[in-house]
Image 1 (cartoon, rainbow over the protein chains, first blue to last red):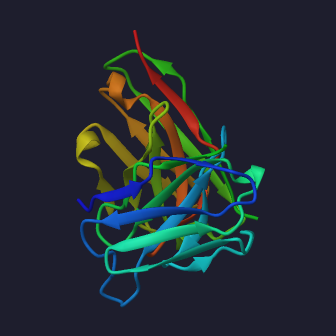
Image 2 (cartoon, rainbow over the protein chains, first blue to last red):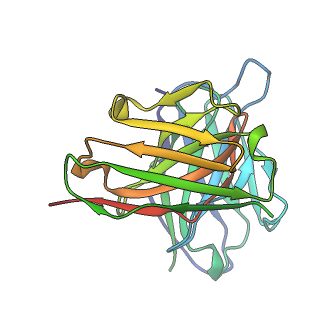
Length: 112
Length: 117
């Protein structure tokens, strides 16, 4: 199985400051169709996960533009330009190119 | 609006059985693969099982092979997970997830399965 490794696992951030989460995959999540199926999910406390980013850098329609995804090969990053209180939660990367799909361990973002 | 509503989670003894259901609405259920993903208390996300759109192909993570069976009834827009020989390590919130190639678009609210004596 493809191993997804996130860092840091805990991320205390001051309101209004930027935040960055790294995700490294043991194999490239590039599929035979040419797409790179690297996703980011946010799970707020007590809620289900919701997708933020798909195919590395495509933001879902309901997601604020302060969230952005980037990367290639086996290294990917989720950035929040200015953290707001509603961003508290756990963030997961997920690869969907190789079977079975696999998730990172999660990064817990909290307000400092 | 896509809605996925899971049900069936409860407390069950080790070795017991349980069937989870997921009622889907807001999209053409029969056109999509569907997955089950679980989350043990305080832990991360783990893929459990998947089924293709017409139900003739199923997939399982190794730890549940031979114990869990995924199925669907497209006429009822409902996804199922039949769980047997349950173990304490199966304790988790089980999410029903709508899948497209390489991604999970939508998640249900989850249903809690607790395996304990």
